[in-house]
Image (cartoon, rainbow over all chains, first blue to last red; front, side, top):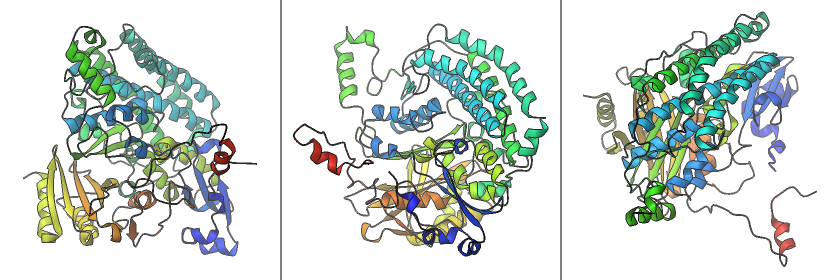
Length: 409
Length: 173
């Protein structure tokens, strides 16, 4: 067990005001076991009545040493750990890691695999934003939205299960392509979702966007200016809500995002309401990308045929000695990557997800680091909550959409 | 001249022999700098009108133990207006694993530096809040160092079950 609770006030002296020492303001602990801290986030609050004077976030309760563990795994084995970081963006994490490995070993990915990756990544974005919307609405007092969002999310998870056999820990995107091609019913399932979802999206908007109770909890709460948000390293919808137009899918496209037509919603106030609007609109845009990708889904292989890095299909192993050798080598020793370091950043539902991968020429990553968007979002919480009420903290945390698995790794 | 070349030239002009090397790998440019100039380099890249590296994308470290210089602190900077990345690397000797904080230029460096301090044991001079962040505060050692073992669960057999149970770290009563 952590002994963090033993931290004395003296150690945090520089983070609270003098009034806290005199006992004029109250120090209150919030979390880590608190329903609205979205996981195991702990906040130490300094309160003047109901007003927040200072806030000290404390993370690390979900630290599992993924970066350290990766150093002991081959590149293929390390992939499964990426699922377990941001548990609402499993396929996005797979994608980021695979892009880094592919950049390191200069591996080409077939066209069909690229398009399926985009479809899955965008569906994952919708699923993640649905969880955001569900929990955000719950935190601001709307129970029914929670139930509706989880109903739609289930449709997406069914699609993931259809492809990978898993609803969440997919490990479906692999270096060089995909684990295997999508099954026969995939296209129909995605088309069904495209048909159903726009109507539902409008319903969510109708439930919240003009709702006076919601507006009073969200408008002008926890605002941050554009330059300040950049200074704090916010990215994704949290940054775009402030009016800064920065989306890696547009600015530094990967996986063929430059071919799709979509808009990047940009807000102006950077408050809770704008962050909510960004995600609501992004779901619609993600759906546009899915539709375009599905219309232009080419035929062909879904895995690179470079046998030095990508295992041969099962059918070949029975007939080809060479395929058997490659299979054996890849599943025992793994492949070696040339010496060097790469940094790859993708747009996850929460913002810039980066993978910094160092190779020493061996079959295991010498160092793998993940730049996770939630880490920066949580860091900005004190700036956002200062001066607001305790009840607003709940709305602000949920509007940042931080995932603690993503933060702590 | 590309945006990245412009940044590299600006760094070379300002810091001359303090720029140790410029590496190109897979279309990524990493500038190795002496640790004395890191804060000034960040200020230059951040404030220059033509460069505008306003976003600290990632800040991490790599341990090359037992080689010397042992550590490299790696900065990934991004320019939102110009849409380009630039990597900075600062090698550090193991006996003086200390470097200036860049918190004053990029506010989010605060937690990233705490993470490096926690997991690598590199100290950041002038940091406002250098405490452990991911590991418990009474933790010994720095887990991401290469000489720190990965750790494992000791297997308990019937003859030594109690002996191992005594030193196993979990809540007892």
